[in-house]
Every structure is written in C-alpha cells, then in structure tokens.
Length: 173
View (tube, rainbow, N blue to C red):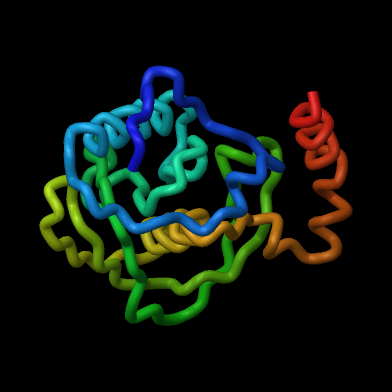
C-alpha cells in the first residue's frame, strides 16, 4: 500500500470509478495500515454508519471497519476478509455512505462466518448474524467493486433515479 495522507481522506461518492475496482490484498501490516484504520473509524462514526470499506475512501485495499457484533461502542477492523458458511436468507433495506439518500432491499445470508486478519496480521474468525452478517456482506461487496445499485430491482431503479442522477451530476462537477 503506498503512503497515504490519511488526514485528507474522505468518503467518496457514487459514481466515482474507484468504487468499482477490485481491491488488492494487504501484505504489509504497518503504521500506515493502522493510520488508515483509525481514519476509517473516524469517518464511519462521523457519518453515523455501521461499516466502511477502504475503497469508499479511494484506497483500493482489502480492509473494512464496522461496529462490533457484541458491543456497539466497540469496533472491528477486518483485513483481507473472506466470507464462509453463509446460511439462510433474509431481506432487508440497505443504504450506503457512498450513495446517500438511496435505499435498496437486498436479500443476504442471515448468518455467515468471516475469516480475516487484524492490524498485526493475526487471524480472526468470527460468526455474525442479522445486521452484523449483512454489514460484513455489504462491505465485502465493496472490496469486490460491487455496490447496492447493482442489486436494485426495476422499481428501485425508478424510485432512486432522481437521487442517483443528482450524485452523477455532482460527481461531474
């Protein structure tokens, strides 16, 4: 990961093309990775989100942060995450900090296991259900260049057309 001035990082918005990129695995667990994680947590909390992936800051690396599954006052930092053991199906509304004012009903696994690394490269294995499982799946989508707009029904595309057009116009400047 190249050196990044984390103080200048902010949440990027749809349709920024960096949101469509597949992220690279983290291979260096150093102070720059820790600084990125701290900034991601700050931005997630400022935006009142439950999760935030590195590509949402324009950093194309496999890492996301989210609220803890056991204590909402605590956070999780997951590096090089991989979802396994996806079980059940549940539909729910999802929003995205990179696509404000857009909500999409998405069917996701009701529970899943995540295999990842912490900021020191140590393995993490955790199982999440309901909102935590949904959050992990949403953030892993980001690491693979997938957005909630990709999962919209035709009716949702129509309902969200104005908000998406406004974001597109804002992006073009």
